[in-house]
Structures are given as C-alpha cells and as structure tokens.
Image 1: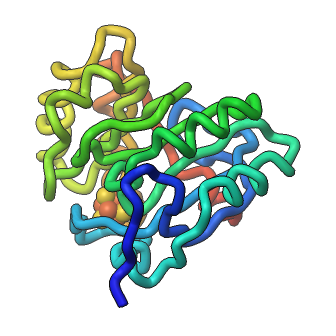
Image 2: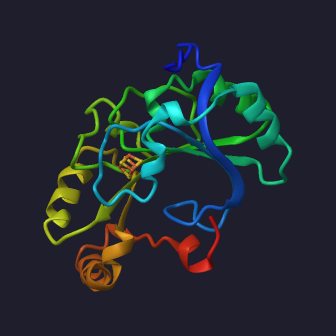
Amino acid sequence: MAHQIPEDGTLLPLMEEFYTIQGEGFNTGKAAYFIRLGGCDVGCHWCDVKESWDAELHPLTPADAIVAKAESYPGKAVVITGGEPLIYNLDYLTRRLREKGILTFIETSGAYPLSGDWDWICLSPKKFKAPRPDITPYANELKVIVFNKSDFEWAEKYAETVSANCKLYLQPEWSKSKEITPLIIDYVMANPKWEISLQTHKFLNIP
Ligand code: SF4
C-alpha cells in the first residue's frame, strides 16, 4: 500500500540515519547526524544513492523519534539529505531539532519548495530537474557537481542566482574524479570565487 505521508511533516520516510563526519562542502570535517529521507524524482544518472528514489521502500518514521536519536549524540548538528528531502514539509522536524539546540543543515537540489528552519542550506542544483528560482537566494552554499567540461558554464549560470555571500563550490563527480579534478583545479585558480569540495568521507572510508 502506498505511503500516506501527512502534510504536517510529523511522519517522514526514513531511509537511514547515522552519526558521522560531514565529508563535503562548507561543513567538511564536522561531526553530524545524517538523516536520509527516501524519495527523489530528480533522476541524476550518476546518483550514488539510487536506492533512495522510491519513498515507498522506506518506513514512515515519527519525526519525534528521529529527533530523539539525533539528540543522543554529542555532535549537535544534523544534515538532512536524501533522496530529495524538500519533497516533504520539514517545518516540524527542524523546529523540534532547533528546540533541542541542534543545528539544522540541508542538502537539496532545490527542485521543491523550501520548508524548514535552517542554519545552513547547501543547494546542489541538478541538470535533470532545475532548482526553483525562489530557493536559490536562500542558499548559504552552492555546490555544483562537475561531471563534464560543460558543467563549468552551467555552474556560472547558478552562481548568478545566489546571494552575494553564498559560498561557491565545485565538486568532481566521484566516478569521473580522475579526469575532472585537474580541470576543477585549473578552473578555481583562474576563477577564485569558487572553491574545491571533495568527498573526503569516501577517502576516509566512512559513510
Ligand atoms: S538529486 Fe540527489 S538523490 Fe536525487 S537523483 Fe540526484 S543525486 Fe540522486
């Protein structure tokens, strides 16, 4: 039977949750509790969590139970990711987390309306389903995954839509990293408003 997901965000399809170190982007190196919600229709062909796509496969879980687990770890920050977490209304979950003094970070493609109260919004736009124009000004961090050369031009297009103090990152797509990383190094040296983001958790062999 299909999930009946309440619109108030009190139940969410939870794929996995784990305490680890944020491996990429601005918050690299910080201990954080990861909450991965199931469901994504963006369809990146290089996606490394395709098992997240079908929300039906992931149990509806009370947001309060997720908060209680997050609270039990010493690192007081969560990264809400997916899938595409903004498919769901995240107001309730983030409000409860913040009430417990936990910082709220999100990783989103921006393809769905913004909900939730955030300490850090990492917008990672995808070619396959464009981010909503009303979300880009709220990004604290723009993280563009570079899969081929033409992605630099595409990244610049989004850099124009974010706020002036938004951090700008270029990150090699993992399977193309040998070929793409040297291009990113050259690009960042020539265009220093950008920085390099690496998936350090993959080098560290942690989730
Ligand atoms: S947006 Fe994220 S979860 Fe969805 S297909 Fe792309 S990489 Fe995978």
